Amino acid sequence: MTADTTTPAPERAARGAARGGLANIAGSALAGGTGVVVTWIVARALGPEQAGAFFAATAAFVLVGGLSKLGTNTGLVYWPARLRATGQHHLLGACLRSGLPPVAVVSLVLAVTMWLAAPWIAHLTAGESPQVVADHTTGLRVLAVFVPLQALTDVLLTVTRGYRSMRPTVLLDRVLRSGLQLVAVGAAGVAAMGAAASLPVFAFAWAAPYLPVAILAGFAARRAYTSGLDREKRGTGTERRRLRRDFWIFTAPRAVAAVAQLALQRVDVLLVAALGGLAPAAVYAVAGRFVVLIQFANQGLSQSVQPRLAEALSTGDHAAARRLYQIATGWLVLVTWPICLLVIAFAPRYLRLFGEGYAAGVPVVLVLASAMLVATGCGMVDMVLAMAGRTSANLGNVLIALTVTIGLDVLLIPRWGALGAAAGLAGAMVVNNLLPLAQVCHGTRMHPFGTGTLCAAALAIGCFGFVVLVPAAVVAAVPAYAAGAWLLRGPLMLAAFRRKS
Image (cartoon, rainbow, N blue to C red; front, side):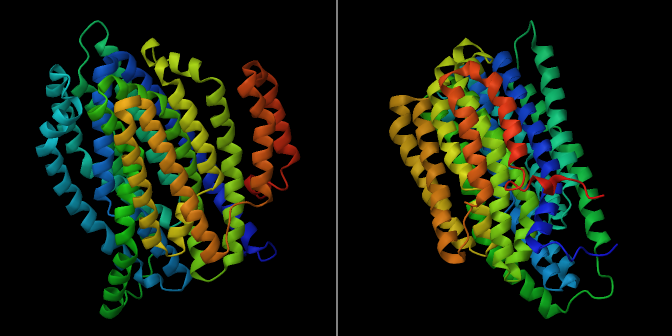
């Protein structure tokens, strides 16, 4: 097969990103959809207090797992891409050995810590409901057992993405794990019918799928590594030591930033439970579930773009990197802005699906959906800054955003409950996107506002903005949006999604 030398580099990169990104976005949509269904099952089966404890426990689990990964979900994409782009394939094995063993050790330590701290976490987040504390403690300990599997699953799949392979992430994480979670939690919900629902049983059902997925992710990572391994050269000891040093200089700030980023997404649930009570925490978690769906779409596209962007920036091709960033942002806006606007239009109906007790979450939905319009309009700016090597600036931005959300949460949750947490998260979203956007624009002369981004934004507002005022207009908005995307397929670079003959 000969290389395509007639197509400009940005367009070739866009085609590669589109092929991986389309599958990843489809898988992310499936994972997000099953997540909404799982949330519905839990909310219906456990009731507000027990459901609030469940969401607080899973938030703690995700935070601990994020800390366990030590930022390697960025380093293990950036460095393999850089080594390939600069002809240093023989150091790929040393790169993987720099990242994987520390994650395994730290995840075990943090799992034990979470197990021991479970009673304290339960009393902190469920202190006003003594009858829930015992089950909450057991649920936290059940989840603690699976922390190493969660961390290793994510890191091993990161390795495959570092080799430009999106298929393992889509099939194993998006499809298999989320599908197994839906089946297991659904079975727990059916078993709970006519009997007292058990929070630990739901926690086990939610976490157990990490076991088979971790094993399969290990096989996928090994296959990706051995298929690209340069068996003739392994690198000198000096090269390997220098690589380990450079790997952790790059990755260490990202380790803290990754935890802070996860805290932005999860600590608010814990704070609502601790400061406002378990029932408001359940309302907040249910009302904000659509945010996770949009974050999945962003993540799915970012993971496909990330290695190509890293390669372009590592070779100094800023024009290709800028073009790829703008194309990908246009795709992201095209997918996510209609979701945000539809959620705003149908918030009361959306929340009633989970039960009448969750109707109080309408203001939460409106605040978070508005903030997501701003965040997705900036594209995957956080990842662009990291791939440009600015992990320290990335860390500073996330810490500022985390300070904003915690400060607003502590101030507003006692007064406004779930709405106070929504205001805190919305403020953090704006800060965590506009700050890196200013840094990317100043430091690399890159920005996301290309023709495709502007066309996608105008099309979404033109078709779905009216639905916010007249919900019945959705009947005309959907086909109009599809027709508009077809007419604007050139500026939107939708041809990149076509299979080449």
